Image 1 (cartoon, helix red, strand yellow):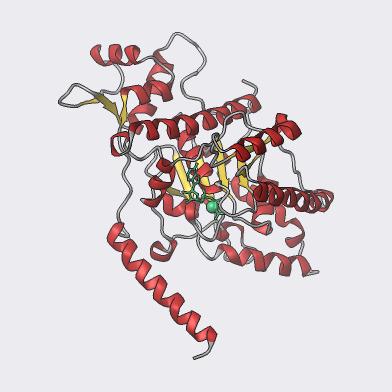
Image 2 (cartoon, rainbow, N blue to C red; image 1 turned 90 degrees about the vertical axis):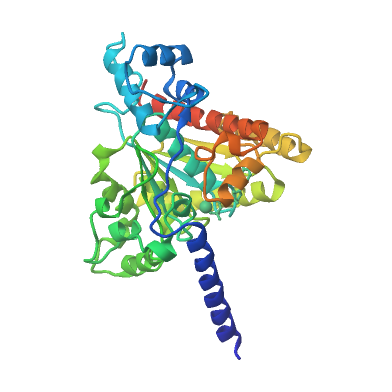
Amino acid sequence: MHFEDQILEQGDLISKKLHLLSVQRFPPNARKNLRSFSLGEVASYVGVSQSTLKKLHLEGKGPSPQTSSTGRRSYTAEQMLELREYLDVHGRSDSRIYVPRRRPGEKLQVLAVVNFKGGSGKTTTAAHLAQYLALTGHRVLAIDLDPQASLSSLHGFQPELDQVPSIYEAIRYDDERKPISDVIRSTNFPGLDIIPANLDLQEYEYDTPLVMADKRSNEGKKFFTRISRALAEVDERYDVVVIDCPPQLGYLTLTALTAATSVLITIHPQMLDVMSMGQFLLMLGGILKPIRAAGAEVNLSWYRYLITRYEPTDVPQAQMVGFMATMFNESMLKNQMVKSTAISDAGITKQTMYEVERSSMNRSTYDRAIESLDSVNAEIADLIRQTWGR
Ligand SMILES: Nc1ncnc2c1ncn2[C@@H]1O[C@H](COP(=O)(O)OP(=O)(O)OP(=O)(O)O)[C@@H](O)[C@H]1O
Ligand SMILES: [Mg+2]
């Protein structure tokens, strides 16, 4: 048997077996559910004290929480959003402080998570950020731009089984192009929609150079506007768009970067990773220059490096973080995402830290991971608010 026949056969075998495994673990038509949130979590995400929440409940105001047999109160994510509305309508302040949606004149924020180093934590970052922003009252659209569809599968969409369309349908060059609203799906987080990915996305990498070479067409020369043009169709529906980019510097990533208003570069603080990121920055700069000259608006409000999978007790890693800080302190997020088995374990069951129950894990491991994620995400939410001039 030839090599190519053999690998085709083995590829087929793997995908069949995996299919079986994942059908057993997660039936294709099962919608993901979302747990409820404790009084402490609600207080922290909404930004009020626990005693205020208890008082509201006792007075029968706002959404009423579920109470366990031991008297613990909990709220669904929907109820958390209702609470925000309630507090804004009945609060003392005239301005809406609990519902952080953008106001007239404030631009839709499009945040791209990039780095061509595989495994630098892009998808983990994008998923937790998108969910955090939704939990804190923003209207969020997550776009999975990686044909490998990791962000989609974290949200319960499995391209092999579900046959959900990707954003390729909304950015393709031919007559089959569809409105972007056709490819948007809701998730188990209220306030968070997603455009899942599948292998079709790869077509965009082949189509774009062909269309660019086509003298009769103007479309290819403006490939970099395709995501921003598609997003303009749903601009009113969202406050923030989070794009999870594939680990390569192809046309998909470039198109995302030129649609972006801000960029997060995820970096694991190790020598090889930092060297590879240096190469990435050089290539990116070299490519963006001619693209800007061709008329693209690469107008970022901000960009930041985010240290991921950080082990502060690992001396070489800590040194690498120090080294990066001396080079571009201003461009680094102050908070880092620590390495935690809680995050990787949650990932194995296709969940994020915002989905798993605290009781299902070692408490201190859970707390340390959530604390790190929340502080990173709160810092980013703050940058977004600053961009809106608040
Ligand atoms: N803070 C963390 N602690 C522990 N494990 C992590 C952490 N962040 C990410 N991981 C794990 O590392 C692996 C790679 O992470 P992730 O998929 O987010 O990277 P990526 O940059 O999106 O990868 P790719 O380039 O393949 O798209 C995953 O298995 C994930 O669960
Ligand atoms: Mg990824």
